[in-house]
Image (cartoon, rainbow, N blue to C red):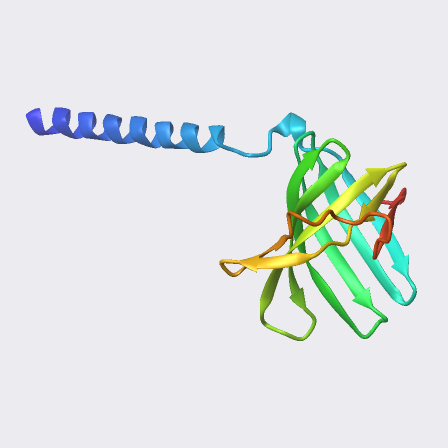
Length: 154
């Protein structure tokens, strides 16, 4: 009889511990259900290059998929994520170049203006094997590589 009581106490402790862990993990979710934002599709064309950006914008962050097709010959595709500050999206593009196994990570900056996203161009530097925009040189939104236009059919 004593063994059964100790066994049931051990089981109760294990159940309470498991429920506590589940509660903590579900409470640490980064994306609140109300703050997921709507998926938006943007497309851009620059001469023979095209780009598509499928992104979710929340009040504080963005995340999604980004693909650049270079003249139909090869492409870079991967994930984007970062923070939203006012009308500026700054983050990283983690991508794989077509035909290679290696993954790359570069900074990305987009300016939201009139239902368009303007992809800024800037000087980059590498610090501790990570690429960043050079802080002392402003990002240029006047001569962008791509100007993304919002698509309605998504």
